[in-house]
Image (cartoon, rainbow, N blue to C red; front, side, top):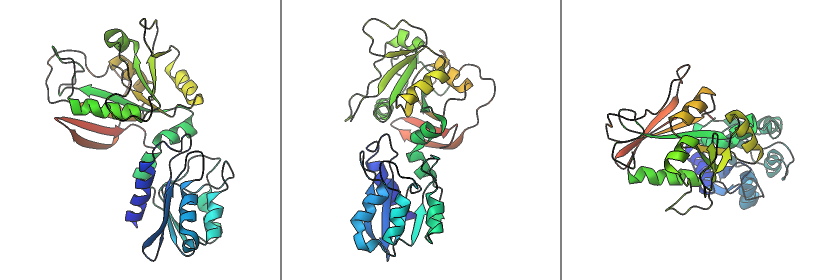
Length: 313
């Protein structure tokens, strides 16, 4: 069973961002142990469940549907997926995650009322796929990922070196930029480095919006957008403009400001095998400890990437 849900997650990952501003949802229909239909949410069109049902045709009757998120129960740009599942004769639905959108939620209850067996798995992998959309739709702000590059002794610069981390880590950062709606630094970083913040040296389907938080002015010729308001207000304004995910690449001042406001959702810490011995540390003083969950470690070239959640999706 988990293999089929993993396949649904894989389908959604393969088309990541295609359904924006909708969440990417993957679905797999299984009958007698064989896949008879699968799909993921289309650009401006059908949800993944509807695509899978059409692919399966009459084979959907008596089948089990594995879906990364609860089928919708409302009539928006498409009819309710829960009703389509019942009409197709699906007998069981395995749901990877609940729909946090109060407008569309309720599919699990509608399916059960119609006699369809429902198993709610509540998979972190399924929730993580839509983590940005979940924060955007429930909190009215973008999902904020704080990226920091540090030495083993917690410094953000290395004397005499341009970069803290290696080439593989820097490439990963460009991939992260390409998957983010916006990337931001603080004015201290702007004045020190005049960064471009674009996704380079990779096949980027789009470029993120590039922001600078703080008081201007920006340097002549800078292509960054200046956001000078309170960070919470600016995040709400960005969300209203459709920004669901924000990659924060600023220095210690900006990182500390966001943490103090409890506006960081995920932390990515690229750790280099270097002891700098001097230089600014990764964070300033915090008013209280920040508990982290789901800590993982991944080798990136000679570096190590530590990933953890401040707020789980």
